[in-house]
Amino acid sequence: MKLQFKPIKPRRISDQVFDQIRELIFRRELKPGDRLMPERELSVALDVSRTTVRNAISKLVAVGLLENRQGQGTFVRTPDPDRDNFLAAAMRAQDATLEDLMEVRMALECNAAALAAERAVDEDIRFLEKSLREMEAEVKSGQLGTEGDVSFHIAVSYATKNPVQIHIMRSFYDFLFHGIRENLAHLYEKPEQIEKIREQHEAVLDAIKKRDPDQAYDAMKIHIMYVLDFFKKQGEYIQ
Image 1 (tube, rainbow, N blue to C red):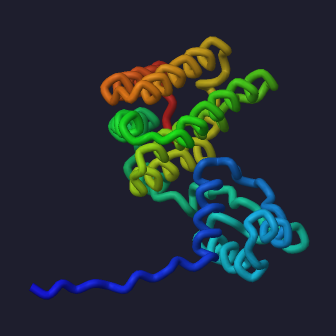
Image 2: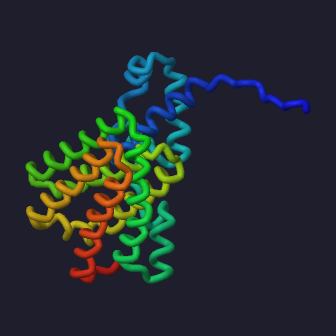
Image 3: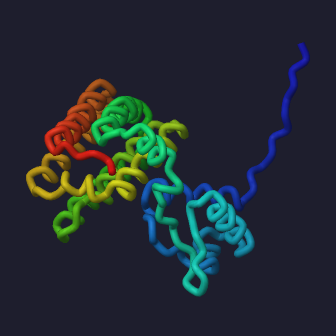
C-alpha cells in the first residue's frame, strides 16, 4: 500500500504571535478593555519584526478579539452579548432561565474538572492559583471578585487541552459576566457567599493537584450546585 504523506509546513511567525496573544486573552491575562502595548514594544518583547506583530494584530481584530481605537491604540474587545454570543439569542428565543444555564454548566464543568485533573500541566496549576489570589485581592479592594472567578473557570477549561471545551466555556463566561452581570452580582453581595465560593474553588484546585478526576468532578459539582441553589432561591430570570 502506498502511503500518502503531506509535506511539513513551518508555521508562520505571525501565527505564533497570534496564538500567544490569543492565549493571554482567553486566559484573561489580558482582560476586556485592556490596552495592548504598542507594536514597537511588542516586537521587542517577542523578538520579531513590527510587520509580524502588525499581521498578528490584524488577524486578532478580524476574529473579534481586539479592536483598534483611533488615536488611542489597540484594546481587548469587550464582548457584546446581544451581537456576539450565540447563547444570548438562544436563551432569549427559548425564554430560558439562569437555572437552565447552570444545569448546562453542571455537565460541562464537572467533566472539565475531571479532565483537568488528568491533563493539567504546571502552567495550568499556576494560572488556577493566580486566579484564586486575584479573586481574594478583588474582594479585599471592595470589588465583586467576578474577574478572579471567571479566570478560575476558564483556567480549568484550558487545563482540559480540549479546544472545543475552551471555546464553549469562553462563550458561557462572556455571557455570564457581560450579558447578565446585574443578575449574577447578587451572588457576590454577601461576604459569606464569596468566602464559600473561594473555598469551593480551593477544593477543585486541590483535587486537580492530586490528579484525582473523581474528586475534581465532585468538587466542581458541589460548587455549581451551590450557585444553582442560590438562583433557585432568588428566582432570578434572564431579561
